[in-house]
Amino acid sequence: MKQNVTQILKDIFTSSGYRIVDSSIADLIAEKDEKKMYIKFSNLLNTSYIEDFAYNIRDGAGLIVATENASQEQIEFASQKGVIVWDREELAYQIGNAVLADIEGESIELGGQSPPVEKTTEEYIIADDKKKKPKVFSGNKKEVENKPIESKPEVKSDVETVPSVENKVIDLRSAPVDITGERAISIARPHQRDVTNAALKFVPLWKYTYEIQAQRQFRSKIIDIEGNGEGYFNSMNEIFENFDLPEISNQVEVKVNDYEVKAPIITKEEATKAIYERVIDQYTRDVKFDNTIGEAIISEHKRISPSKKEIEMEIEMVYLPVWEAKGKRNSVEINANNGEVLSNPVDNDVEIM
Image (cartoon, rainbow, N blue to C red; front, side):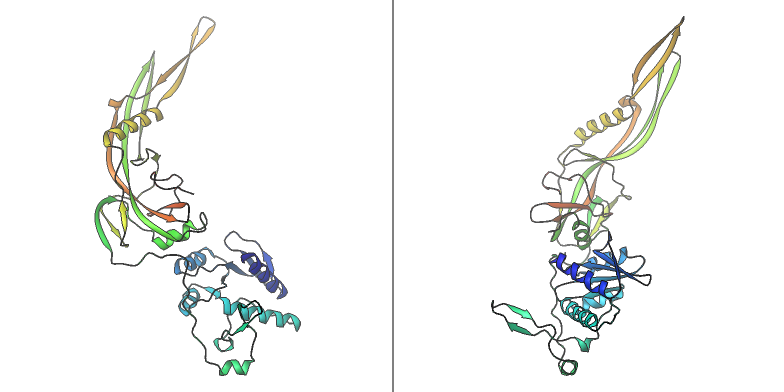
């Protein structure tokens, strides 16, 4: 379907004097007189998708082409964001216009929207195969103007949006939830096309901060071992992460009815042992010394590392909010604080794509 529609769009824009180029943020770009039209084929017309598409357009106009009907609210919302929508009815009108102009040898400006009175209501004929097909070019202009314009049916997106509820505040040391469920679905779709819903969960992490002050002496040389830093140790799967999280507060606000707070599996004692081993390993160095005896140069190697007593460590339990965007078989996990697609699964239950 998409390939066929894309080819038709290429044909009608090319016949109207546009140059077609490829794009990473759209299915194609039509250029004419130094103007650009970013064209994307999609039946997903929710607000998040339209906003994302509009946000990525920097130097031209946007056009979303759909083979399903769009509601007037969706068309108006897109217009406010600078995006034109050609739904099923509009697409039929624009294709017909382009074909007639090509027959008459005229060039038309594409990328607009037809006046409401010139759009025919959808009629149906019964074909030999008993299927209903739209009669998209029936009637003349006068007949159309005299016909009442039917309101378009509200299109149902294939995305199960998260129901809006009153904000809840829960007592949990967590990073804030700054990404909505709909936004998470939109982010996940390029990675998993059949994503239809997203579930919010809070994943327990052992956050650690450390500072090292140590010295080692080897023969006549003094070697300083200094450093500081922080990190996160996942209490579900024992993976070290370097999340860039804002300040953690004692309460977090959520905007969904259902969410899950995961229970930690790794105890603080187990985490502390693993974290110390990691930090010590990070600051362990192989040092080479050259010593001259007579005419001979003797090289000596020494492995130095800080001890546990020389590391000041603070460890606490915090939570990372995560959207699990679910497809039929696999899932994509999104950091609900900053929208980052997580490369490692945050628990052992998810089969990440």
